[in-house]
Amino acid sequence: MSAARFTSSTKLTIIWIILILLTLSTAYVGYLELSGLSIVGFVLLTITVKGQLIIDHFMGLRNVRGFWRLAMLGFVFVIPGIIFTGYYLTSV
Image 1 (cartoon, rainbow, N blue to C red):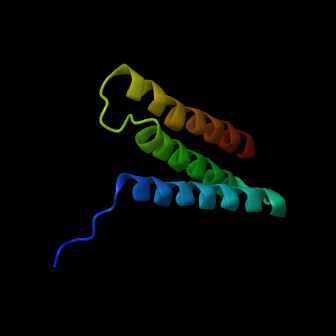
Image 2 (cartoon, rainbow, N blue to C red; image 1 turned 60 degrees about the horizontal axis):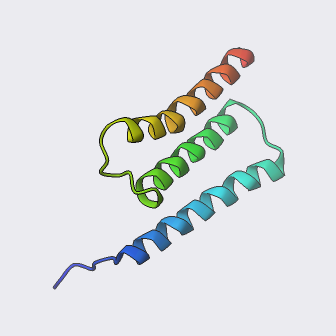
């Protein structure tokens, strides 16, 4: 039996659906007006995952080495990390 192969458009469609589901989950958290360190962590984690998926698959930087990938990943990981740290330090 041959393994199922995803075409490029099928793969991007699946990733797009994942991005929509992550967006809906954070919108639902906002609708419920939940707060707390774990909620902030969840929202920032979804932002990080969404950013990583967009950079890798929709911007095409998955196999790029060097400055551009590092710069984009810096935004994805550093900025949410700073926000979480600031939120954590004010809640202690």
